[in-house]
Image (cartoon, rainbow, N blue to C red; front, top):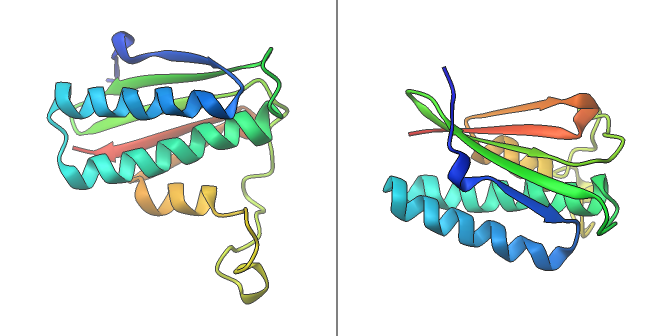
Length: 136
């Protein structure tokens, strides 16, 4: 059963400047939950990518649209749920960022990083919600 950690919930306007609040949230979680450095490093990169994607690609930098971050915990994992108000995307059909033709592109690595840093990544709501699970 997942227990919501309500005190760590965030709702942000869709502006790049808001990402610093996510980093502050993760720093607080590290201290409060005594997260190991390896988990902390994976969480900060993966969650920042998820929030960045929600703000830029999901909500198209529209400050009227909100990006929401919820934090939960079960017996074995710390779980982050990031949702935006966008239309979603085809998360099953993304270009491979490690393919030679994509190596020099400035974007396109966010989902790849999330999948490689989190223990489980689950997309829902047509891709406008992503869950990131990190084993404790």
